[in-house]
Length: 260
Ligand SMILES: [Ca+2]
Ligand SMILES: [Ca+2]
Image 1 (cartoon, rainbow, N blue to C red):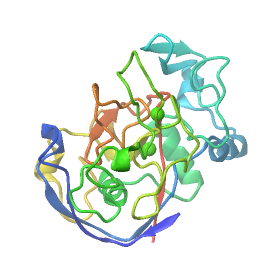
Image 2 (cartoon, rainbow, N blue to C red):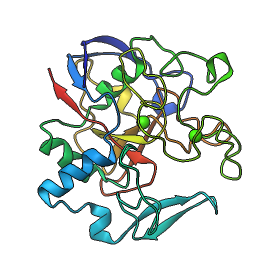
Image 3 (cartoon, protein in one colour):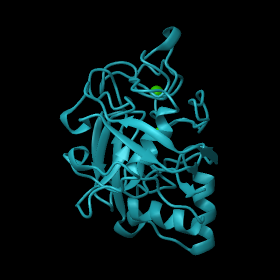
Image 4 (cartoon, rainbow, N blue to C red):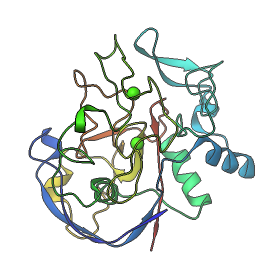
């Protein structure tokens, strides 16, 4: 884990979607943050130590985007060990996915950690840069090259794999941000602790905000290997999205934090 020294920052953007605004000052305390997304190998230790069954395993299906058809599908037998459906296999050093918010929270508890608040996540992801578009600066391709795992080409028809990966990549395949955190941008979306609300930034507390008191969906951040220029530019560091707490997808994982 990396120690993230607490401080003030400008959260959100005026240059994106309405629910990413307004820019507002937030202060967070120091915390430790996983330097990479929780891997398949790490999740396997938890599952075998606790005999844990994920929501997708209990349901017998999960959501998987099929690269060949370019469509999302309710996929029987998709789970964290077979993220793209039966016959697919998750490499041990790739980020675990097909884990719900409930599963991620259970892992975090077992590991003596917790899920990050949305404010902690964005503070960490910005890596000390102020109001930059991406976690590394303002250019999508600094020096002409992708520096994170997103989708180059036209989604969903054409995936050029210019960044080296058409799907998930092993963690730490790309440079870390200013705080030593890998893949905060792209690879897999990351669950946050908070409930999601479109208008939360209008009423967010300044000190250590923890999200709305209740809701139907949890915050996810960072975008994934499926984010493309023509479709969703959720590789922007201020981008927000959400999913129901029992959802599993083959582009959604998590990382944990711990109090200092
Ligand atoms: Ca890619
Ligand atoms: Ca990520």
